[in-house]
Image (cartoon, rainbow, N blue to C red; front, side, top):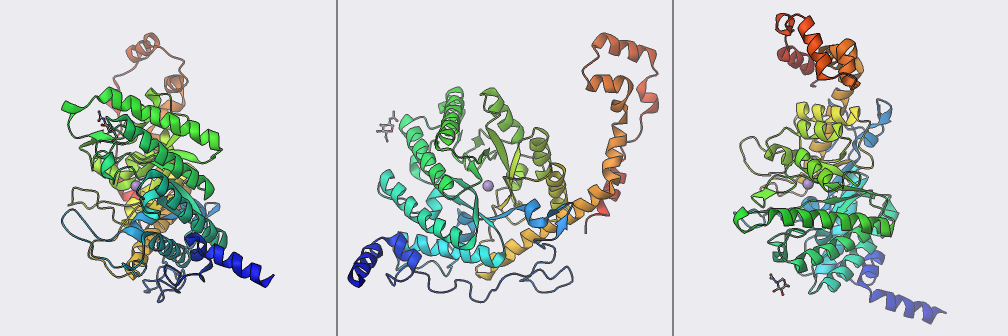
Length: 471
Ligand SMILES: *[C@@H]1O[C@H](CO)[C@@H](O)[C@H](O)[C@H]1NC(C)=O
Ligand SMILES: [Mn+2]
């Protein structure tokens, strides 16, 4: 009996995922205690606290407009930035040496360590969700089959850690932009072999997301665009992108994945032009190819500003079409022209963002993912906490502000008054589709010129009213 037990244990120890789970088979790659030993659970201490390792606005269980803050906000940590962000940029090498990185370990042992660090971080920060790219949680192997096998093993560990902690996947995605094979595109590559490879990778990433109980699956087309139209068959590429997405819908149904599929617009970077330029373009594309019912959007704030919009514009537009599924909360820098992915900290912007969330009754099954990173020169591991605390507090503060704004109803009332002519008479008929140009002409001929009596837009007054809620 005892011998059998030892034999079984020895066999299990040869499986690295199991070794990492058990923490007792191999001295390498295992959980060696805490990766953030100086940090405990981040408490809520209220706005007057001067402790930076505390929340000043985010109080997870406090009820705002009928729901706890954590349910409105559904925060998520992004594995790629938080665990893998090393500070490298197009001009310089990595600057960060995080405690879970250890050059003496092999790729799989490192992957296990990073996953353990992720769950310690989620636990201490008090965040329920995480998001991942396939190739960031697990290494790329010598073949697709080897990559798939390694992904499975890391997912096995993540599944175990989720069961232990109750943490959940907000969404998974496939990284189809880093490897040179995707240099001409993934789904929109001119080479069908690349399209097939990308489909295989998405298939495996959808399997992983399903296994981890992920609530959504995201597509960001980092290479789905072009650098010059001279060498590009634009129509063929768009058709292929649509075919790829149709394939994903069919596969989702085949495996019984119940989560939402989301497209993440971005206008450019790394390509000169990306097909999912902004919310309007992406929703037009979905409509054109009959995919509108199957997809929603993941709106990223810094992508909105790169497209020349405010984040609020993209959120309002997506929400107006019933397509706002998730927010990648971050912000750009006003003086920097590229995607800096900083934590969103501006209380006014956070208030406007939160107002959209409140008005549409929440984001579920989506949430707010911190697709945000530290500056290159922020190299202390505690900076990861400061970054997320600042982002969570900003959005919680925005939620409180927006709730007060909506509950008092002054600003919504002013907007309602501005459009009051549409609730009666000819305006009501326009809304109901019960009037034609002939009748409208009759109305216009019989009335005074509207220019004689048009009220002011009072934009400055709206700004005064808004400013009272920005706290
Ligand atoms: C397409 O990619 C495959 C696989 O890399 C390669 O063998 C083939 O030569 C490529 N064909 C064209 C026309 O690009
Ligand atoms: Mn993003």
